Structures are given as structure tokens and as C-alpha cells.
Length: 124
Image (cartoon, rainbow, N blue to C red; front, side):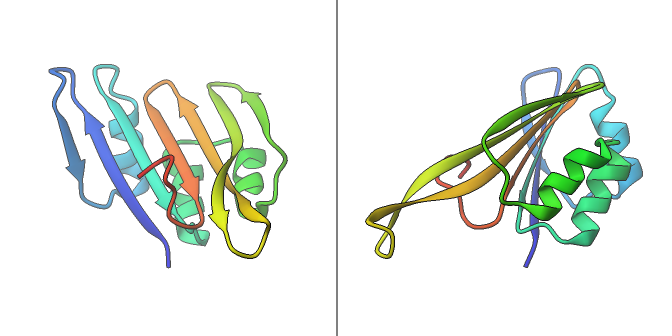
């Protein structure tokens, strides 16, 4: 089940957690040059991907990479944003003691988005 945690760093340095935003509110908050928005999304579904596409105007290929998953480690540059696909190592009883979990980081002028499919020690 998808979850979104949204934090807003205001121009005075304070950080507040915001309730769930629709695409218009997300676009408004992300376009404020005096603040920085962070969305941490766990296990995104179609509605969360639509929110990113409409609210932050993410490039369709960036959204497709999140939708499809299983991406190689890379950095993609699109107009107005960067997408980093990384992998964090986690303990695993099934894979010789370690496994890799995919993590997408999207950076725009006014927002940072982290996307992962299970709990992430790197993010939490």
C-alpha cells in the first residue's frame, strides 16, 4: 500500500509535515522559491505516479522508470530535473547475506522526491 510523507522547509528554516496534497497544491508548494518540498513515497501506485506527473511535471520517461522499476544505477537529466536511480544494500537471509533495493531520487528546483518500494534505512 502506497504512502506519501511530505515535508516542507520554509524560508525561515523551519520544517513542517504537510497533509496529503493534490496536484495543484503540490505544484504551488514546489514553485515557491523560498521553500523546499520533500516527498517520500513508499510503494507508489498509479495515483501517486499521476500526482508526480501532474503536480511536479515530471518527464514521462522518469515516471515510466519508476513505474517499471528494475532500473540500472544511473543519473538522467531532463529539462528542469534530475533523476538518480541508486541501490542500497540491505541484510538478507536469502542472498548470501545482502540484497540490493532500488531507490529513485528526483530533484527539481523546488522539490526532492524519494521513491522506494519497502522501508529504506537510507531514507528513514
